[in-house]
Every structure is written in structure tokens, then in C-alpha cells.
Length: 464
Image 1 (tube, rainbow, N blue to C red):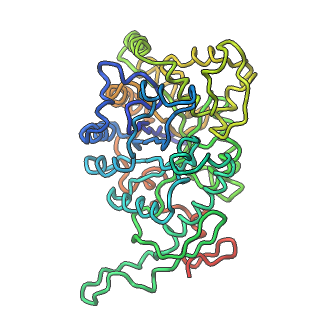
Image 2 (image 1 turned 180 degrees about the vertical axis):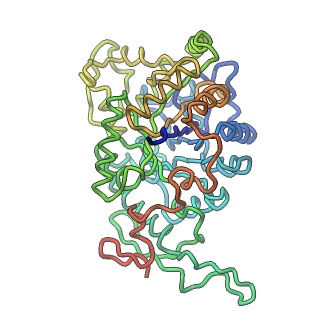
Image 3 (image 1 turned 90 degrees about the horizontal axis):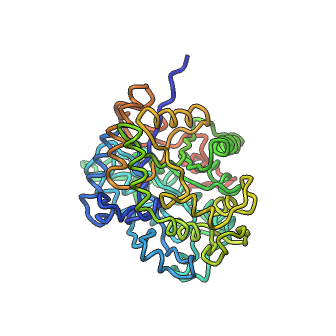
């Protein structure tokens, strides 16, 4: 009989005061307004490491949430991911105060220069001892495109086409330019790097061109652990080809289907189920008793802002919900935002007619996530049901009131899961990828391996 699967935890945060559960920064015990303070992040990282969390996952946007009423006023007033600072710059701070916690940062590749971006990630992988992950996103905000000097962003599927090209060049840099034994550090011979072991990368893709050698020597993981959350058909194809940790959403039946779908697509590309970890987003409110947990839920609801949640959802879908009659069905205009969010609230989606009022009714904590509330045993039962019955590997735990939402999990829920043998008592040594998958490098069956020195990719010599 096989041992029960260990449950994985990512803590979801953002370098701002409010990211998903909107309005809760106004709670008197919330410390999110300290987000510009180094000690806020180092203390949070230490708490998560005490709870053996796998990663602190930092979401990000690089434009304003300005779809609601066609302006950013609501986002500015309510702190809807605005103001927001760079997530990558937090990584060294938290790495210096921890030894094992993985540090995953979101970076929108649509506005990055591949060889400079690859160097930044490699630098962080060196500084963290191989604990860096990249959440690969292509963006969904026209405001981000305008900020970059464009009239609007590319169409949804075209963004993924460009992303495939970005990934190909990045893999050539990370995997193909430097051989494993290129760096010798021979003081006597005055040779740090053997030139013959460093290969020129030539890339002439549909979106990116490069002729260079990579600037950085190989880091512990070379390619960072790859996170991704695309749920459209094109997004699932991208995940199947590239992603290692995949964020999924929906009810149990929907998530189970998504897991099967992406797994099948990955297997068609020669990958295996064990190459993928699936995480579902949850809001968890746990108390020593059920009454305490319910009281805390009601307390949080008094500070939450459903209107801010709806304004955020406007940005995610590209639909200005302020212009709809609250009780009329939501129509499905053609937008280039997050397709899976858009499809989830079209008329008759999921067997119901969606209106602005039904959306607001969902957002009791300033987001559409239905909280899991109860004692450690009750919450653990629900998490185990997800893992054993649906096939996910773990959870993105969405912040509510910080830091107590995470300290409650660490002090109450984690010990319950450990007693059941469903959660690690100690970290596995090594890199983040080794902790999650048992190896430092991407496996040979991942597309990145085709860009290693001496390997042919699509008939082209990668490094010459």
C-alpha cells in the first residue's frame, strides 16, 4: 500500500496592500501596509519557513486596474493592487532570512528583454542557492501595454505565441550556452572559464532575435522552477509544454477535468504526470474551535469590499461591470483579457445566469473564492478530499488578514496535517526543484533539454 501523498503549500502574496481578498487591509490587525518595510517580508518568510511552506508566491501586475468606469480611481481608493512594487527585489531579502523556503515571483514576459531577464533570474538563483521560481505570465491589461508605449496588448493567443518564442530563447541561454564544466576557477593557470565550453546562442524566432553568449555562469537550477496559470485552451497547451507547477481554479469537478486535460496534453509531448504539480487557490480560515473560525469569518466580512473585488474582476475580464444593470445577464463581449475568467461568467455558464448582483453576492471576502472555514481537523478533511479525490498536489493559500492568516495555518493546520502523515515535518535538502521533484535540473523529457549543448532542436543547432 502506497503512502498518502504529501500536501504542498504556497503562500500567495503581492508587493502591495491588497491583491485578491480586497478590503481586508483595513482590518485593524492587518499589517499589509508595511509592504514597503524589509522586516515585514523577512518576518513573513521566517513564519512560512517555520510552517514548512514550499514557496512564497508573489503575484504581480504592471499596469493599472482601470477598466471599472474606465479609470483607476476605484483601484487607487481601495488599494486594488495599487500602489504596487517589484516582486523580484523582495527575493534576496527573504532568501537572506531563510534556508529552505522557495521564492516564486511573477514576471510578465511581454515587456522583457530575454537575455537581461534570464540574467536576473540566474542571479537570484545563485543568491538563493537554487530556490527561485518564475510564474510565467503574458499579461491581460491594456493599461500595461499603454505604459510600454503600445496602443493595446496583443490578442490572447498571439501573446502565447510570443511567449513560446521567449521561452525558446530563454532555454537556449539557461540550458545551452554554458556547459556544466565550463567554469574551472583555476588560479594557477589564470583560467576562470574555459572558452571552448561556452557556446554562442543564435536565435531568429518570429518575435525575438539574439546572437550572444549568456552573461551568467550556470546557477544551481539553471532554469528556475516554472509556474503557470493559463486555463484557456491555448494556456493549457502552454502549461503542458513548459510548466512544472500549474495553478488551477474551479469546483472539484472542474479542477479534476483541468488536471486530466493538462496531464494528457503533457503526456502527448512526452512528459509524465510526476513532472507536474497542480495547485488550487483557497482561502482558509482556521480556528481552535469551529465557533472561533466562524466568528473570524464574520469579522473579516465586515472589512471586506465586494465592490473592490468586482472592480478587480473587471480588469481581469476586460468587462466594465459598472455599466451593467445589476440584475440583467452579463453578456460576453470579445475582450483580450483572461479568457478563463471571462468564460466563467458568461450567460448560462456553469448552469446559471450570471448578473452583477450574483457576482457581488459571491464576493463576501472581496473575491470569488469560497473560504474553507473550521477547526484544524475540519479544514484538513477538506484539503485531503481535494488531494485524494481531485488529484491536485497542493494549495495556493490566499492571504486575508496578514500575518494571522498564515500564522494560524502554521500553528493550527500544519500540525494537524503532520499528525495525519500528510505534510512534511522537515524540508528535503537542496534546491526548490529538488524539494518538489527530486532533481535540480529540468528532466530530459522537458522541451528545455532539447536546447542543451550538442542537442538538436527543430533541426537547428542550438549552440554553435
